[in-house]
Image 1 (cartoon, rainbow, N blue to C red):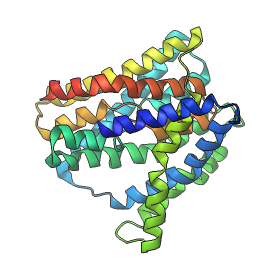
Image 2: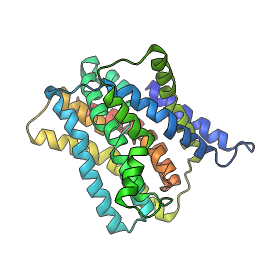
Image 3: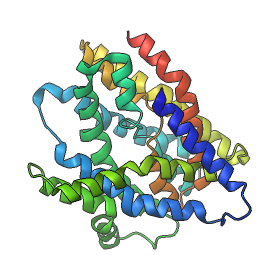
Image 4: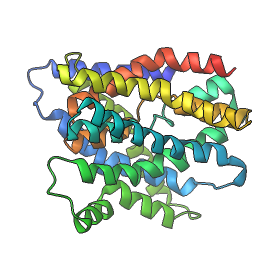
Length: 300
């Protein structure tokens, strides 16, 4: 609950900053640039070298990738049926598959399920969310960004391999099993710790409760998919196969997390429906105050 309150505080700071006449209009863009090029790569460099693969943890490792495939198919289908724009479709493809599985997911798992459940939460986050953030989100941002030139195989490949989060992922995998120098550890930890405060201030700066008529449909669809459909699908997958226990419960609980803040920052920087993305992240966190305790109660 403390982390929820912190996120709300950062969000409120961003909202208040926007009311200051001395704040430049492009402040949100500058904050997101910092996140994209500094804080997010630092967070990936911090977490990826700690990846531990084990056959015993396949359930939380498989779940996020299964959900990613289903959500991509759902968004593309709804986009065609409801005639969403290319920018809106790209934004939802980035924001919806990934949840806030570390900053909110870890402490909520610890509080509601105990320390014995934490390894499953870590695997869900590390094997699913972080790798997908560095690879899948990079590809979608390159394909859908309205500010980018017409995509070609060479252009997309270049964007992927030069994207800060992908470079950090590659370095992190190369450095698995080795330790950073103490000063590097301190630098990476300090920079990574700034991600959530900075990006939530940026979201608060751009947050609005006024949406155009064309944004209502994708907004409501996004919240329904992220907070209801995804945990329901995770539960259906494993319970229908006869699996149960802590690994399944934590996989379902992590699937119920509000949208990943870092993914939202990438969508905004790619020019994909920034107002809609800020609304999905901000309102998703507020709605999560109600839905996460409910999911936990149902699992118990």
